[in-house]
Image (cartoon, rainbow, N blue to C red):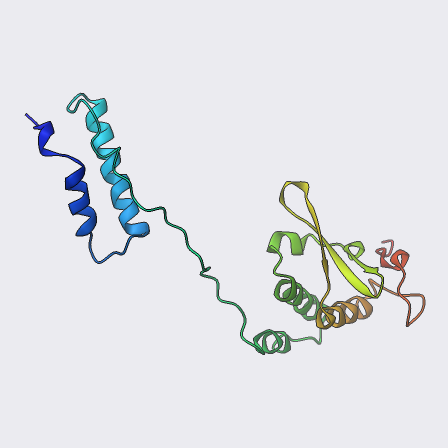
Length: 177
C-alpha cells in the first residue's frame, strides 16, 4: 500500500529545485500542474486521503516582454517597396501591408475595412476599425500610410475627391456597381 506520510510539501520543493535546467517558468509550472493532477486523481480514487501537492505554491509566471519582434528602421519601407505596384492587386497588397505595419491592427480588422472607414478629421485622416465584439477603434493615419492609401484609392477610382486640395467625407463612398 501507499505510505501517505512519505509524500509532503518538502518533496515538491526538492522536485522544483532539481527540475531539468529550467528557471521558474512555464516548464516548471507545467511539471507542477502534472504532479497536482496526478495526486488529485489518486485522491479521487481513494488511494490518498488528501492531495499533498495542492498546497505547494509556485511563482506566478508573467512575461514582461513580448515575443513578437518589432520592425527595425527601414524594414517597413523595404517591405513596401518590394511589392509590385503595376497592378491594382499589387497596390491593394501594398496598402494592406502599410495599414498592418503602421497601425498594428489585427488582420481581421484590416481586411474588413471599407472606403468609408478612411475619413478626414481636421487636418489628419483616421481609420475606423471594427474589432472583435462589435467594438470600433479609430486611429490617426501616419503620413506615409496616408500617401499609400490615397494613391491606391485614386488609381483604383474608389476615391475621387471633388477638389485636389480638399477631401470631403461624402467623396469616400464606393461607386455604384
